Amino acid sequence: MATATTDVTRAAVEAAIAPIEDPELPVRIVDLGMLQDVDVDGGRVVVHLLPTFLACPARWMVESEVRAAVEQVPGTTGCEVRWLAGGWTAEHVTPAGQRALASVGLALPGADGALTCPFCGSSDVTQTSGFGSTVCRSAAYCESCRTPVEVMKVKR
Amino acid sequence: MSAVTTGEDIGSGYVAAVADDELLVGHVLTSVAGWGPELEINIAVSSIGQDEIGHARRLYELGLGSPVAAERRVYESPAADLGACRLVRSYPRRWESLVVRQFLYEEGDHVRLGLLRGCSQPGLAALAEEMEHEERYHRDFWRTWLDSTAGKGADAKHRLQAELDCYWPVAGSLLEIPTDVETVLGLEAGTFATALDDHLQSLVDRLAEHGLRVPDVVVANSRAEGAGPDDRLDEMLAEMRSVYADAPGSW
Image 1 (cartoon, each protein chain N blue to C red):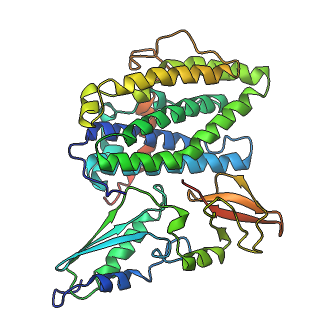
Image 2: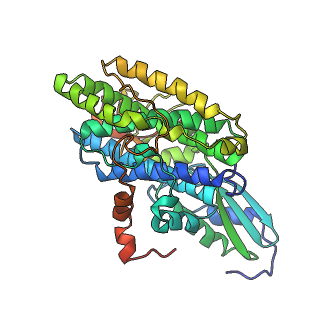
Image 3: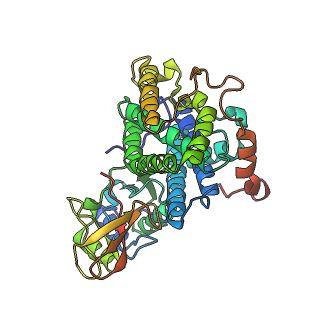
């Protein structure tokens, strides 16, 4: 852990967290909208994270990686990760996050619930199940390119 | 959205009891995930089970204040210290048993979460809201399978009726709450009792759509001996703790 020789800045903490990816997907947690706030008090840092889904089994890994990254920021004397109760939706995902998810065949529902195939771009996508391979995914099918598609679940 | 607060002053024992319900439901679902009549159903049951365990984890942390306290309760507490309701303290014996049990649980949990969303504790209210959003998929699923199973002919309906006769006496057990806890949560005394009456009537009406009738028993005092299915909490805990007993976790 870095010693308290310099002041910790919020920008430095955010820069340390920026490269961290979701353990299951090639997308940064900041692009998933999980980083909600950073509090800095001297060398003490509190990172507020928003869980995508309450039962996500990767939460402990995200927390561990965030803490490890922040503790390397010069001036940090300690890092606490706090998880918010909830409120995440697909709308928290940034455009870069959307592209990253699409690159692995994972579609995000539009504001009106419309689905677009991440492979061919068609809107002729039908949800086939409310459940998928993980708690955050539903199953769908693109009638245009005839490919199974995974969709981030709509929570609201 | 609110940060999750500590377990102090929020009826922590009640919150942990709700977590006990979710944990046992999740344990059963993940244990019977291969029972579905098709693979897609098994994926769904697994997913629902995982959701329930995840919700239990968050509730434990909220009610008990720390992940370590949550682990101690789950793996070391005597069965008598757990507050799980009678509806979940049993194993389903067949598909129709699972459908009826889960239908009753999800419908009741929807009511419970709706009430908790209105409590005065922001951490619990926020968590209840999030759970309610995630569990709408669960409710839709078990309603669908009640409808589907009831429509599969006389034999299937007969089995459903038999399971309903078994589970109905404890159908409202997850809405039991001490009056003083209602007060701590900023709810008017009797809020849950009033909701229970409405809830049971709505269940009666829903079940009647399929020609299913509820037995003529009073759904109250669900901890009375003989009410509902056999209480197998001891057996369930032994199964859940069998690995821990040999290889305690690192917490």
